Length: 234
Image (cartoon, rainbow, N blue to C red; front, side, top):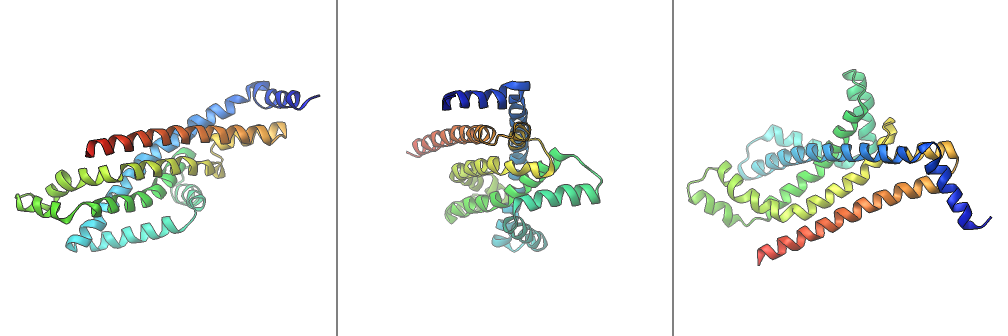
């Protein structure tokens, strides 16, 4: 039997027999759902934390909230995401609240973790806007909030959009550890196939290729976005 025949046989055994390919497609759907909802949670957390820290730096307000935000950033940027995932699922939701929803735990863990990084991205974007823009807004009679919303934030978002999109790619790949709480995502789907066929090569390569394709597509879209933003600046 040639290597090609072996390859075809392995492919059939891992993906065709018993429709095992469905473990990958079902897992992919779960991965995309977790990623999408985590992006929303991360955006909300990141934006709120960035605003609190920026306002505190500019005006000295929100001292308690700023301290809480600092502790949040320190913990979630300084500990592994898989540990945070298990803490949220087994301790916060499981022991303290009696909730066993794996999808909810994954969305909260990945979203809150990503929010810690997005907060610094948002803050860097706000700081990248020249100080004169803020002063110009205040001189026109805008309040601090109106200046931030109508003048500062639109420019900041334009500056950080490519970096923010790259954070979404990182988030997509981080969801691959969701199997630690037995959530059947894409990686877990490949692991289930491996456990039934006792063949690691095909399932792992398939999972890797699917992630690679998703990342390449997102990277292509980000590059197009960057080129469009550069053209709009001319």
